[in-house]
Amino acid sequence: MASLSLSRKKNASRNAAVERKNLITVCRFSVKTLIDRSCFETIDDSAPEFLNFASILEQILSHRLKGQLTWFGYESPRSFWDYIRVACSKVSHSCICSIENMENVSSSRAKGRAWIRVALMEKRLSEYITAALRDYKTTRRFYDDGAIVLGEEANMLAGMLLGLNAIDFSFCLKGEGLDGSYPAVIDYTPYLKFTQSSDSISSDEEELRTLGSSGSESSTPENFVPPFLDENSWYNKCKKSEQKYRLALEQKGYLEELVRLREVQLSDSVTQNKLLLQRIKDIELNHKLEKEQLEYIIVELQDQLKTFHRLGHLSADASLSQISFDPGHSHDGKLDSSRLTGGKEETPSLLGLCGSLTSVASYKSLTSLKSSECLASPTTEMTSPGLTPS
Image 1 (cartoon, rainbow, N blue to C red):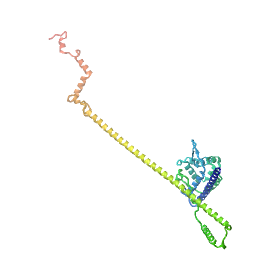
Image 2 (cartoon, rainbow, N blue to C red; image 1 turned 135 degrees about the horizontal axis):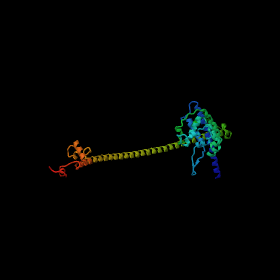
Image 3 (cartoon, rainbow, N blue to C red; image 1 turned 135 degrees about the vertical axis):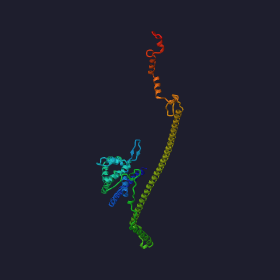
Image 4 (cartoon, one colour; image 1 turned 45 degrees about the vertical axis):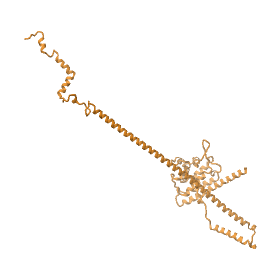
């Protein structure tokens, strides 16, 4: 049991070493293809060489990256931008703060991809990587054992990226390449050779001829060669066949892995498509409900408005009928003076007389005229003392 676990550990370490070596080798190839492409045209987001290089660099910086422990003890995934943001914070005139404050970039992975593009346009990508690798304490805190940035391959990576300073890049920081929801997938196809040269074909044909001739000549005892005399040639042929078999097996494994990645991407796209369709249906349903509610509210408001108009007309008719049936009011709402005077027209003299008679002062003047001091009646003159009738 102990030997089995030990062999598993050895196999795991060997696989990790092979993975690191392959990533560094592919990164070297991608840098070379980028330099070759830049001789003919400007490198931008649409260049497949750049997209492949960005995916390779993202895979290298994310190799054996530790997760972030939450409050409850669970480990959540982390992006390489968290490491770059801390390790490159002391670089003078860095773009870390500007990328951290970008409004259209929200996720950590998208910020890391934006940092790669900005660093390439500034021609300082190698400088950032070198500064991050020098902070060994921070690097050790973010990565597990066996990571590329903790091994000897890290120094090779910084040296390879130095050649990219000779390329003028032009990127848009609002494109689809900054979408953090899609993983970085490396396309190994440009770095594989599936061509079969004429030399190999001729060598295979020659091997078949030699095998056939040896089989045909074996019937003749005079030309028979014992197997032990030609042991080296058979050993070399077996070695070549074994190498070809391993190469074909590796290519087959790569193609199977590529198909698996494409299937995962397809399933993710189908799932996202279903989610988007369900979201569209929910939005349409909500819009329909809101429209029905608004139409119902409009109908209610119209009914209330009609009711208010009907009540206003009824109150106006009631007031008019009350005024028309009031005997003390005329058609224009004023008192009818002809009813008060018995239908006769009043003259100014009569009005003045009536006013003088009804006033208190005129009443007092009439009583004063009736007094004995001012007026003499015939009876008083006849009965007054000292006077006799004639």
